[in-house]
Length: 432
Image 1 (cartoon, rainbow, N blue to C red):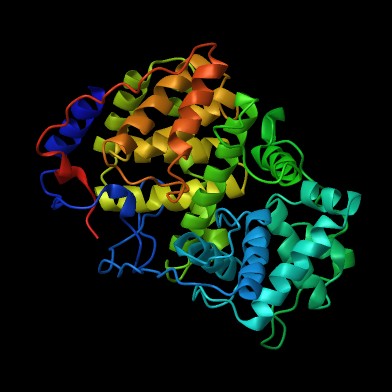
Image 2: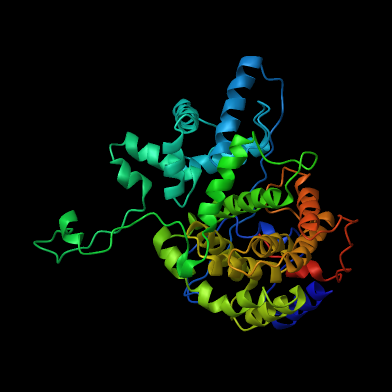
């Protein structure tokens, strides 16, 4: 019911924004042009380009030798956090998407098809990681990118960069005054008085680190042979943790793809802009642990109405800042972005609030409040909304709901139907 009220409020305040009916707002922002302009975080994403063409992949008979090679690729992609699905040896849509995400992450052209070198590096890195034992575990724990960080470490090592630089964030060098038209940089020794970068196992203010947590979850998932299935679920809390970290991976990859299309700004500059999301949304993030879902979204709705930004700008900005928040382990930025997307009518993002409340990252642990967020996201997907995390896994929705009921000490009942939506609801979707 509240979803209808808040979207009606947004419509009333946004008559000047023409948003034609069509695809769900979750697809907005796939192709961004322009740069960052003034707004609530000191910047917002400008216009969107034409709707990208949908790619289709045809499944055909695959010889056994090729299938084995493909399964090895899928296993490697899954290990490094690029969700390729079940390693069945058939490179379908999910696998091609995972390959593209791997290519983007490594700086290769994102074609969805591996070159011989890209495949060799991916598979050899996987075998190196799983045979590394304690050394691999230590590298993963020291890197906020988790198992993905291993790929960067191996890549930089192959390029001749010392391992200590490959496994820890590189601090910017201090520029010296220009001399004779050249820019000099302070030698490493002169930076000694500054506090050296150390592995960060907890976030600021003593709060637990989601990045470190997901690293551990990923290691356990790999040792278990894959993600928990609904039929084999014995630990509901761990199953939710797996799905939380999977959603985090999707959010990071999605935002990084969009950020690459923002012209004129580096990833560090975008991260600095997104840092403003935390203070701007802190009141609403704090309310998450104290108030029912309807009251929280009502407050976020007021924020949207007073932002002075178009729905397209807000949604595009929130997707990029959601990625930044998770990548930098800033839960205020991540939660603020997820709340904003949900209040804009993209209910599947409500799953993230459920995870944060269920596990206590960026919010007080409240499984009871989490259930409402999980349920609204599940209802939206059941009613036709496009899943934003792991869309190729149809069982995922029911797995999350069963686990969410279990951690609340309740048996999962039939999903409650969502409140009827007004006929004008598509007007709130962000057009491509």
